[in-house]
Amino acid sequence: MLMITMTFLIVGVCYGKSTGKFKGMQDVIGAMVKQMNTVDYVLVLTFFCYNFLALLAFAGLGTYITFLGASFLQFLGLDNYPILLIIGFIITTGVINLFVGGLTSKWMLLGPIFVPMLYQANPAMTPDLVAAAFRVADSSTNIITPMMTYAGVILAFMRKYKPDLTIGDMIGIMMPYSIAFMTIWTAALIGFFAFNIPLGF
Image (cartoon, rainbow, N blue to C red; front, side, top):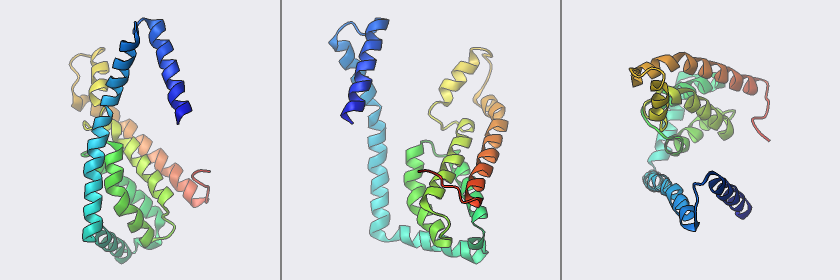
């Protein structure tokens, strides 16, 4: 960790000096403080997410929701079709992603419920497979949700070339890409699962 910190510090200071952005140590400290300010959002989000998870654990509600969800999937007969479970989870996460921004917050809310639920429904739905399905859905629909952190930045760059564009225009333009990404990456994930290819080392 120290080596990573020192590497980025040295590279950052050298870059700041060469571009003239850093004229003294105070500028370096100011830049570091500015970057650390972005951590506040994560800390606040983590505080409320962990309180929510603690409440679920204390009340036993998370276990109950997991049991109900797994029982419902088994009732529908989907426990015998893990590929349908993968596709269903990807679609569910993609829809939720349109309304809830932030990768970490979504995973903190969905992970503790869906990982055990899908594993209970079918042991082939391992945590790494569920996490991969989550990333497929999240990354595919990021570009078509106004809740994405960089939606305003993307729209600003688009307006450099066409000033009258709106957020709706941006979503409309990106929709075919979103559908294509989700289709291709879902097919790739199913291929990994069907041919029993490890998802990682």
